[in-house]
Image 1 (cartoon, one colour):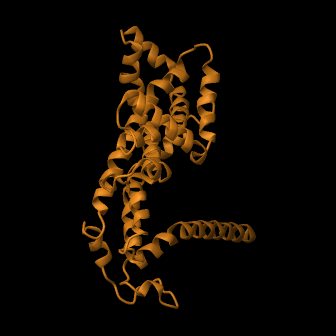
Image 2 (cartoon, rainbow, N blue to C red; image 1 turned 30 degrees about the vertical axis):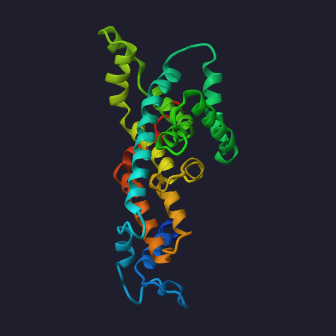
Length: 288
C-alpha cells in the first residue's frame, strides 16, 4: 500500500515536472524579449548575458510611439484593420459554406469538400507567384488598384483560412441536432432563417475558434505582405518590423519591445476566449 502511494506521488511529481518544462520552454522566449526590451542600448550584448537587467529603462517602449523614429502605431493599425477584416470575412463566408457541406445533399459534395481542404496542403511559398500573377490579371481586367492595398491582403488571408474554417464549422454544425432545424422550418423559417436564428446562436465556440484562427494567420503573415505592399504607410507589423532591420534606428531593445507589443493582441484575445477556442476545436472532432 505504501509503495502504491509513493508511486502515485512520484507519478504526479513527474507529470508536474513535464508540465513545468513545457511551460518554461513556451514562456522563456518572452522572458528574454522582456529582459532585452528593458535594457539600455549596449547592455543587451554584454558578456556574460543576464536575464535580469543591470539597469532598467523604458526608453525602448517610448521610442516605439515616436513616429519620427518608428511608425509603430501606424503599422499596428494597419495590421489590426487587415486581421479584423480577414477574420470577420472568414466567418461570413464560411458559415453558409460549412452549413451546405454539413446539411445539404448535392452532387459532388464530398469531392468539393475534400478538394477545398486539400488546397490547405500547399505552402504559401508555392502559391505566391501564381497568386501574384492572378492578382495582376484581375487588376488589369477590372481596372482597379489591388496591389499595394489592404484589400488584396484581406482576400489573400481569406483564401488561406477558408479551407480550415469550413472544416471546423462543418464538423461543429453536424453536432447540432437536425430536429431543432426541422422544428424551426415547420414554424416558417427558411434555410437562411435557420442559419441566422438557430445555427449561429448555437455555434458560438466554433465561430470564436475560427475567428481567432483567421485573426492569428492575418496578424502574423509576412510573405504576402512583402509581395503586395509597397508604400511605407501601408505596411503591416511583420513588414514594419522587418523594415526596422534596415534602418539606422535598428536597436535590439527596441526590436524586442516591438515584438512584445505585437504579441499582446493575439495573446490577449486567446486568453480571453480560450474556453470557447477549446470547445470549438474539440466538439465535432469525434463521431458519436
